[in-house]
Length: 470
Image 1 (cartoon, helix red, strand yellow):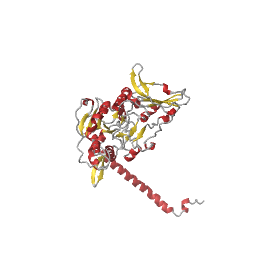
Image 2: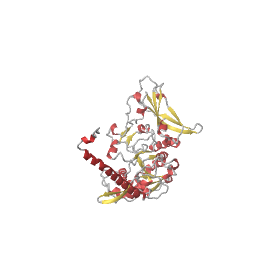
Image 3: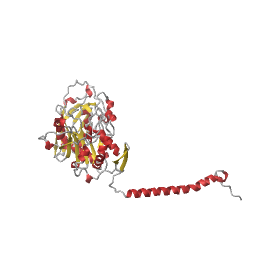
Image 4: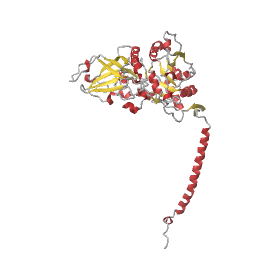
C-alpha cells in the first residue's frame, strides 16, 4: 500500500520555507547572545558606581555643555514612622521688602515659633525692632545686578527672590530636610506643614506646592508651577542640586516675569515635576474668602497668601486681629482646621455646613454634599473681568433669593475640655439686613449662637484614606 503524499509536497514554495525555518533558529540564537552581552555590559557599568551618586545629565545651551543633576530614577516609598519630619528640620526662606517690613512683619509674628529656623531675606537693611526676638533672623540678599532681566511688566527683584532657597542652603545649617519658601504676606500653619511634608521621603527630589486659583494665571504661567506666595517646599537634595546650577539657569530665562517661574524653569531642567498639595493657597483672588475657606479641600490647611488683597477672614476686625482669632483653633486642633462637615435637620428642612474652627452656615432647604463642597463665589477672580469660568476649580453662585441665603455664624471663642477630651467652639451669627423670607418653614434667624463639639485627633491625616472616609 502506497504512503499518502505529504501535504507540503503539493506546494511550490516548499523549498523557500524550509530555508527560512532553517535560518530562523540561528537568527534567534544570535539575538539572544547580543542582548545577553549588552545586559552584562550595563550590569558591570552601573555596579561600579556608588548607589549614593546622583545621575548626571549633560545639556547643551548655546553651543556649550552644562551639567545638571537629574532626579533619582526610582522614587522612595513613604518614610517609616520613626523618621517623621519635625518642625526643627524645616528651614524657611521668606521673601520680604524693606519698604513693607514694618507692616508685614506682623503677619509673620502670628505663625512663627521659637523652635523654628529660617531667614527673612530683604532687599536692604531695616532698623532693629523691639519685637525682633519674635521673628526669624534678617539677612540681605546677594547682589543680582549681573543677571539679565528684560520682562517689561515685571521687576528684577524676582531674580533676588528666586535665589532665596539657594542662599538659605549656603548658610550651612545642620539636620535640614526641607526648605520652604514663602512671602512676607503668607500665613503658615506650621504643624500642618509638618504633616504634609512627613508624607514624603526627604532624601529624594521633591518640589511641593500648588497652583493658582485663577485659570488665567495658570495659563499665563503654568499649571506645573508652584506659586511662591502660597509657599512651596524643596527637599534638601534637590536644593543642593538647584544651588549648583541655578545662577546659570537664571541667565537663560531673562524674559520670565517672576521668581516662581524662574524656579519652575530650573526644576524643569532638573527634570523634577511639581507634586501638588491642595493645602498651599496662593489665593489669587479679591474679596471675601468665606466661600473658599468654608469649603476647604479634604487636606490640611498649610498656608494663606495675599493677606493684604483680601478682606479680613473674620468680620468687624482688621487682618491681624482676624488671624489672631484663627490661632485659637490652630492651637487646639490644627489638623481639623477648616475641615468641612455637612449635616441635616430633617424636621426643619435645614442644611448645616460646619467648617471647623471658622464658620457654621445654616441654609433653608436640603442641599446635597456634592453641592455644598463647591465654594460659593464670595470672591472675585484675580483678573476682574473674568467670569466664573476663570477659576481653576468648580464654584457655585452666591444665591440672590432671600430665602436661600445662608445664615453665617463665625467663630467667637473656643476651648478644650480635659474631662470630656473635646473642644468646644462657639460661633455667633453675623448680622446682616435681609428682607423677610415668605417661605412657610422654620426661620434660622432666631438662632444667635451655635456650639460645636469635637474630639481632637492630631493623627487625623496619618490614617488610611479609606478609614478617613468612614
